[in-house]
Length: 75
Image (tube, rainbow, N blue to C red; front, side):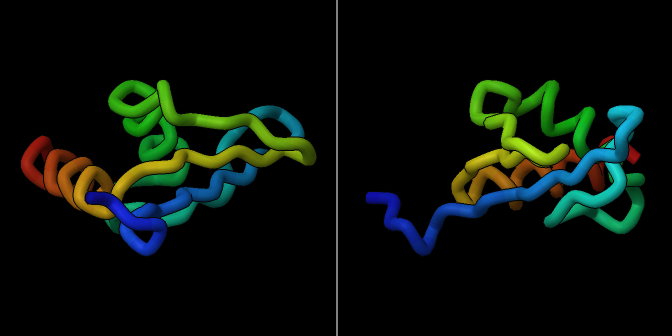
């Protein structure tokens, strides 16, 4: 059973023009925008828009690790 400590909240911050300027859990090989685009494609159903040019993805630690691994093998 998944507990609260197994959950990861990936925070994204946007510039006024909509570009992603910061996002957590980002693999070093990806730009903030590339990581956001990848997450949007693979896990867009768990994205929540917030006020002030921010948003979050709420995922399990296992899913975040799997997505990071997927980006490593795609490169």
